[in-house]
Length: 455
Image 1 (cartoon, rainbow, N blue to C red):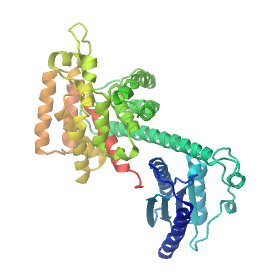
Image 2: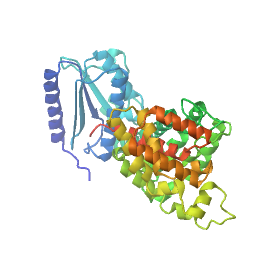
Image 3: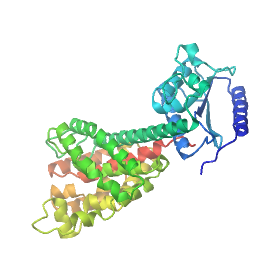
Image 4: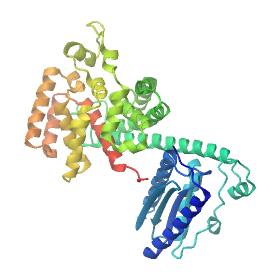
């Protein structure tokens, strides 16, 4: 339970902050950005407030990165008295004040950010001195000082508004970031080159009706769907995990229609609409702190789809089994992507992601590590797309050959992969299911790499 603080504790916290500012500016004689939160009432810290503060830290870093500014020093403090961030930045005070005011004024949650800029002498830069308007009340929009002076709004009203602003701002940012990184993963997947039998930057693989631009159109059309999946996960986070999944199916049908409209009827991402939609919904269900934990994300995917194979595929007969996936399940018990997701994406957690990360650790770029990752997934997983373009015997033969190759060299040269690509094209083979799993690997890698400031 959140602990309220006394007036004396608040005064002591302000004094400590002033002493810390002085000490830092003595060590770093450059402008200092001091970041705190405007939180009404005696409770100054909570999990929700920390999430809002972490969002502010991310946004500040983005603005500094965009201005090509790297803090000489960064410090984060979090205790009962609140959250504080100190950033020593060697840049003109006016530039920093404009940058921080843009953050404070640019979104509803920015109203809760208090970003002071001190010059090298410790003098606080005033926004009005730079021609910037005064801050507004978070309830009525009038000048904040007037409302504070006249106590226009009760503490309870301010606390209610603050909580709503925090929740809305955090949820909006998380859904947006989940969709952004998922779309980035889709674009990295199609851009990874060479990929045997698949569309890449070199050629269209075994496909005559699509190229990289078809995939660009499709990925762009899927952004709203991926964001909606994340929002659905967040809004249903308090419900059993399967309830979240049940609400994705209508979204998925609309996403498929959007994809086909964007590609003039070409199926580029039907499989990934399912797999990536589930992952984005899992991100919505989880706290952002869990986003760096790939295993936790994949466990949530498994929880959401528990019993899916039995529900979707039980009772199939020779007459009702129409798709390749249904026939494989009926004749061989192969559950395809449904089984992958229900099991928590073992091809990603046990094979794909470790190969991707190890390749990068060895010094490979994302493209070359991604090429090897695709081969590892192809060798380890029964790709039903590949079976659909040939048969089960061919898939097993191809996977066996790739396994032998990877035993000799887990990161084959691009020239070797190009030769495999030409063979796949000649034989009209295409491991599209493996490509979808590569996209999931990229997303988890991006999530782990991006992380968030520790608060």
